[in-house]
Length: 188
Image 1 (tube, helix red, strand yellow):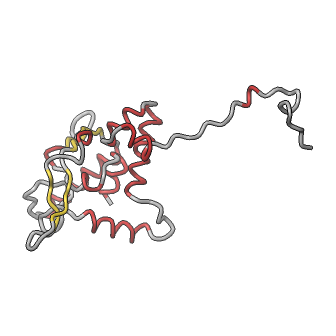
Image 2: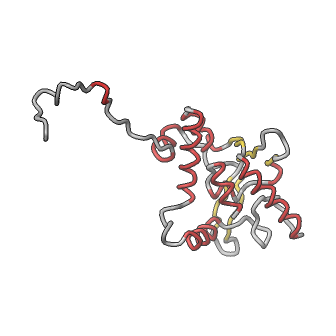
């Protein structure tokens, strides 16, 4: 599922992923990238139901350029090849259009994802992938700010929800070999 390869490699929200425009992706350069410039919004009302691309992202922090890892570049290339081979019109120029030339529904994607993961992996959600991407960027670069930019969040939101920071164990180097701390009995 190419959508998952893009989400896991970028940490993008599904609504952003389905709003990606082909013109805002370049996998032919030395550092392949995509630009997040929009999101999908659900439009309700008689005769208007469905999803529309909003040409601005979710928040001010959400507009960003994301460098793509190799597995996401491969997914983008395969998706573009399939789009060309299908011959289907794609008037909006979306990377992941629906079969009826409109934005793909994030709700339908969620339904398909839940069926594919089954009960054994019910804990795995698109948010899990987003958290994994944020944590990995922070771990590799040692810079939570870089993870914040990758995810398009504020620092507070990214640290609270998307960057796993392991708890620090006590420093055992301060313990002496003279026995337990004062006031504690040694257990034998």
